[in-house]
Image (spheres, rainbow, N blue to C red):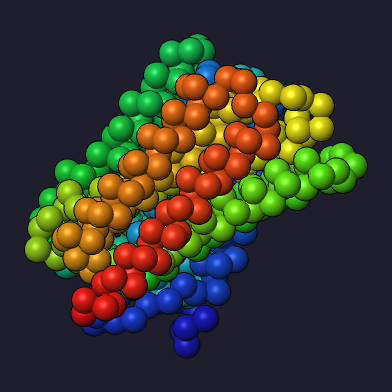
Length: 393
């Protein structure tokens, strides 16, 4: 904690534009509640492996991810780690925990509780921004814009509890558009107070680790649900290979260079990089659920079930496409190298989707082997590209 128990918000990015920031212990503790939330939404998908179930999973996942992003971007600019900030963080954690509890039937009887808990999370964030605007005059323009946009979105969520299903979910979609659109339309207000170029990438990396962790847990859970056998063990190993490959591809070249474009007013590049992490997280968690199902089905099914085949292929394809976008706009990779890496990712994504379409008669082992090979090839290509780049340099 800071030397003073109570400190007003201060503009952290104004201290040193190139200050090396690291996640605080409070932020790491805060992440734990999202471990639970991600686990809950993954369990929801596990019980609803259909096209409608997948889109429902996405709708429930987005508010969780956006809640985390909201807290992260506030902290990167105004975190003081005083008593007030810690207590507000605790309140946010409670609200996220309630949101996670309501995920199991979040599009049914629990949808009111889900909406109200999300409103609670956003209300705390809005209060924090208003407080920052009061104490930091230089940030008032950005704070006013954020508080207005986020308040409109929160109000729509609140109104939705009085609207019957399915129109309630249409309001949720409208509110999320308002939420995501607020930073997109902030323009020069963000370029004047950009986020930390070291802190935000680290935080996004940590969230990616959380989701990868859920994928690993899904593999372990799948194996623990049945007696060990050669088929289930091989599928589990292939699932671990997929998770390891996605980790390698992402962390081998992740940095905050796209965020630096915000400094010169290029909001599109920075926010595209940020928002691409949403489908990446959605895809990783879905992949973990698919692997768990395939481990179980490998004991009793000769042919990979349609739902499992589509889920594993869609999950991995979404991840690879998101990684293609992230690599394409990562400035430090160089223009040519970023294009090459993005092309590799897209090619593998198309290949994996081809497996989903044409692999109707594939066994669980063959299907998983092809998907895992598509991911492992990306690691090999990345290594070769790094080697060639080093030799040419």
